[in-house]
Image: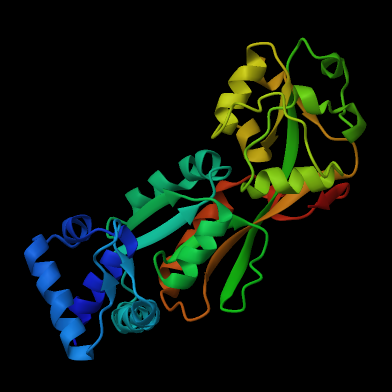
Length: 308
């Protein structure tokens, strides 16, 4: 049994297709299939049901895959420990960032960080909270930037900053004339809101004390904040945007921004890793650059703000 065989095993489990797994591992399909077959012969058990399409792990295969994932993660820590002893920044660092954070935070620090530290190889992917936490626990990513502290026992987070929510209101809406928005002012039927699964949506629904929201865009799925902002600018409805987004707006766009009345909904932004994470040099560097990149008053919870 080899590390390489376990890597092939996880690739087949991930893609549920031998050809795609081989492409991911940069080997030929016959080579990958042969290595999986040798592993099955050694263990004396079938790991995948090849008769189904897509292929799926057998009951024994599920248990072996789970253990293989743990073994590969522990093996990767050996290399990370050596890199950390040398304070090395080399090697890929996989960072997941929420879609409601990435467009507004990453441009503030990532390019500057890369220019200062040529050895860094940060690979960013946007992911929603639930798959991000699964990817962290499985070792598929090294760290994540999410909203609110993680509750999972094998994860730990470092608070980066606090971020307030704002309303973005069309000039044609009656509430555009108000300087502050109260939850009672929000019309569900005229609200552009992200799909379920976004913590950004869940936090605001809780704050507005709405168990269900009757969205007028019921047929509009997979919308982004930027899309909804353009809809508002086009003259219809309102949406919610995070504080960092307001710093990217043109003057005419800023005219559409309205703060909430006190208490103002605010989220915590965390840098999260597994508890057995060892590459502290990179995490410390990232945390410092992120904190330096946001307005100073976002580093503390202000009077009138309420965590959601």
